[in-house]
Image (cartoon, rainbow, N blue to C red; front, side):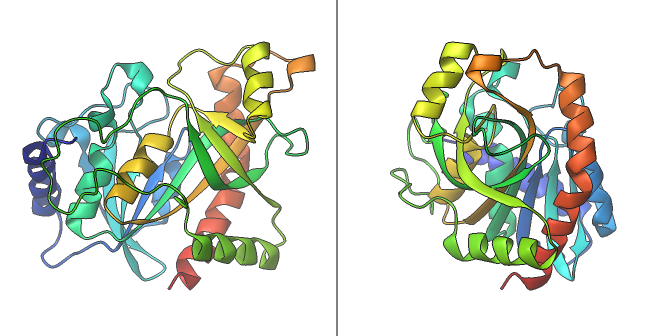
Length: 275
């Protein structure tokens, strides 16, 4: 479980950098290549991770490594611009520290984004997918250890980790905008290696529609704190075991950039109508 003193240090560092009285109600985690979405925040305040005591640093290309706080569609929002991953050598508790800081700041709803490989042959490269459920295949949990944080459910219920009302709202917004929005199951891995043909075939047999190296631990932490969760994947490539093609990080970033405008429109619609 997360050591609460480190979370509190982070909360104080972020709060001290914010205007007096600013209390975020919504949090968002921006995935690989999606940092430009934080430009939508008005009157934004940026807090680099380096300025937060004991906070892990993003070491991956395209993850800026900062919190950005401001207003979007009239909502007070805190964005985590760049996340940390297991494959960078961080522990589960370090990976989800941002989620716990946001919850301590008052966030009640968490939106997550990521870049993922499509496992479903009907979900083409460049599509957006709303995550309806998840498979945690990282071998880790952020809830492991001694429980020392009040208000955190050590035995978090994961029967419905993604909020049904928010999923319906996202689908409604996509239809109104004439955006294609897939819905499916996301499988999270530790990485950093990409999937083999046999692994791809196995994950698809398990019912996964997309695969990536983030999100699942953050969602577990969010649900343990009672946050409402909605998440989107940008499907940057197709993993089809019978005709696998090599893919590079640069190609993933390029595809993410091409899909960023659609994701921005969808987030804008959701934030405008979210109760």
